[in-house]
Image 1: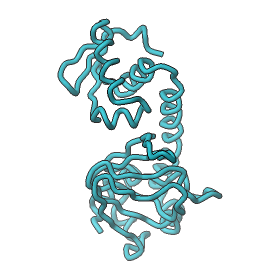
Image 2: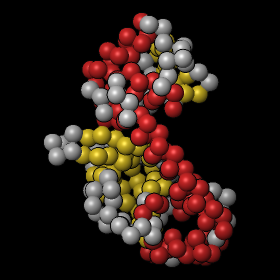
Image 3: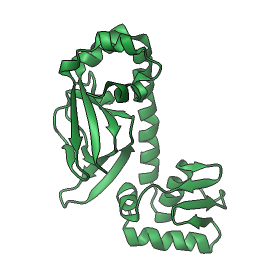
Image 4: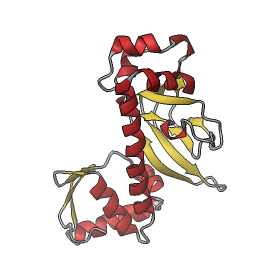
Length: 217
């Protein structure tokens, strides 16, 4: 197991390396690799671990009976997932987790997480912050999906990823369609209309400058 990369994860921010080593039983921790587009866990699978992304990224996804995929959230390198299911009465994953590129994860069993929470104050505080931050992520996703028209969804997506008046789009049009629940062609057409109406300006194919904030939902 790559212990150094594990400590780069947000749950271990400012934690003492030797303290964490003394608390954890490293032989109970599992490191596993996943190929792009492979399913890491399926909806309903029992959650027994908190997992840490040390390489790559994953999507939390909803897969319909027809096979349509809606990406709820993307977890990047050095982010944990499964925190919300620790101590939950219902242990089944509420979504399917899919590798969006070749990824490597470390899985730490709940009983080991319990020891960290009990014996390491810094880890405990980081864990509480993680749970709290997830509430706002869920709120933002619900806000986007609750919009009735394509433009409103796109504007909310752009505003939530905006820095200094610029939005960098880190997803392909296909990925974006799964995140927003919009057909790929509709996204391209609406972005073109928004540029023609001077709402946005394309700096390059992956960077958009926001010109008019008054139209944001």
